Length: 615
Image (tube, rainbow, N blue to C red; front, side, top):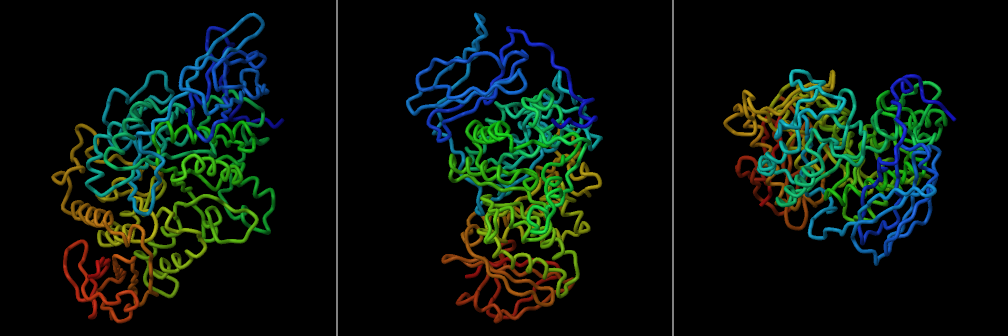
C-alpha cells in the first residue's frame, strides 16, 4: 500500500468512534423509477468501525440487493441494488443488522418529473453566460457565513476571500441576462466546498450531494433551474471528476486504500498533455500527467477503482435528474482517466440522449485538442466526448487576430489557419468558443483596453461556428489580468447593496460600457433568429491585407462577416466573394441597420467587424 505524503497526513482529521444511534449516510440519497440506469451502487458510510460486518436486507417490491461489497475500511459498505420496472415510488427501508441489533435507514425512490424540461442539450443555437456565483450578486446576506463551515472569510476588499454572492443573486438578474440575449447559464461549481480558504471558485468539492449552503442550498438551486426553464433558458452544471477538496469525507476517511492516486512523496501533475497521445511517450510521463495531483489541496481520484467510478457516474446522472440540468461542462478533462471518461460520458448520453457534454481542454495545438473529443483520427484511443472548450480558437485564433500585426503566419491568419483545421473534429459546431473565462485574463485587458478590438472579438464570438460563451462582465468592459487569478474574478458592479454603480442598468453604466453592452445585445439577439449562424455552414476566405471574410449560410439566409484588423479603413472587392454572395445585392448591417451594395467594393472601418445580413 502506498502512503499519502506527509502534508496530507498532517491534515487528515480523526473520526470519532461510531454509535448505533447515529444513522449511516447513503450515497446517492435517492433514485428514480423508470430510469435506464436501474442498477445502483449505494456507498454507505457509518461512524462505526465494525459497520462493514453488518448484514443488510430490504423488503420492498421491485427492489433487490444483488451484491454487498465489504470495503477495506470497516466504516463503509457498497451495496448493489436492482430496481425493477414495476417498483413504485416510495420510502424504502434498509435494515442493517449485527447479531440481534438492528438499525433501519430510509432511502427514497422517487417518481421522475416528466413535466420538467431538462437534459435538452446546449447547442450552437445557444448563447452561454458563465458566472461565478460568489462574485456575481448577493441576493441573500443571511447565508454569507454558515456556522460550522471552515471558511468564515467575508471581505470584498480581498480577491482571495468570499464575497457573499449566491444563487438568489443570479435569479434576481435573469431578466438582465435574457435581455442581453443569453439562452444558457453556466456557473462555476455550486457543490459544497468546505475548505479552510479559497472556496470562492468551487472546484474543491467536499460533498457531492450537497449544494453549498453559502450559495443557498439545493432548494434554491432547483428554483434557479425552474426559473431558467420558465424563460426557455437552459442550465449547464460544472462537473469535477479529476479531484476533490482535501476535506472531502472520503479523503479524510478513505473507503479503500486505492481511492486516491497516492505517491511516496507529493507529486504534482506535469500539466503536459502530449504524453497522452505521443507514440514515443514514456509511461512514467503518462502516469505523472494523469495521476499527479492538480494542487496539494485537491487530491487526485483513482477512477480505475470501480467504487470511485460508480460513485462519480451515478452522481452525474443524479445531478441531471435532481436539478434539471441541460448541459455538462467537465473541468480539467485531460487529467482524468480517459477510459473512465468514455464510460461516464456514455452513461449520461444513454440516459439523456440530447444532453450536451463539453470538456475543458487547455492544450496546445488543434490536433492535441481534437484528441480529447470525437475526431477523425484513426488511432487506438477514440474519445466519445461530443465537444470541448475551444482554447485553440481563443489562444491561437481571436487573440492574435486582433492583437498581432498581419503577416503570413501572424495576426488574423492564425485565426483562419486554426479554423482551417476543423476537419480534425467530427463536429466542430459542438465546440464552445469564448473570449475569456475565470482562469484567463479578461479579454478587454488582453486587447489593451481597446474598445474597437473588444467589439471585434464580440462580433466574432457571436457569428463564428460553435457554441459562444461569454464570461460575466465582458459585456460591460470588466478588466483584470490573471496575476493572480482573483483579479479576473471581481464582483459584478451593482450586485451588492451599496455598490457605487449598478452596471445591470443603463443608467449605471458609462457611455463606453453602454456602447459595448448594446453591441453585444444586438448581435446576440440577432443570432437568436439567425438560422445561418445557429445551425448553418461556414465558408471562410484566405485573409488578405489584414482583412478576413467569412460567411455563415444555409438555404434560408446568408450572413457576411468582414473583419478588418488593420489600424486604417480597408476596401475590398466584393467580386472575390461571388461564390458566397451569389445573387444577393444588398447587405443590412446587423448592429446599425445601414444598407450596403454588396455587388460593389466595400470599405470597412479600422478595427471593425462588419456583419451583414444579405438581401
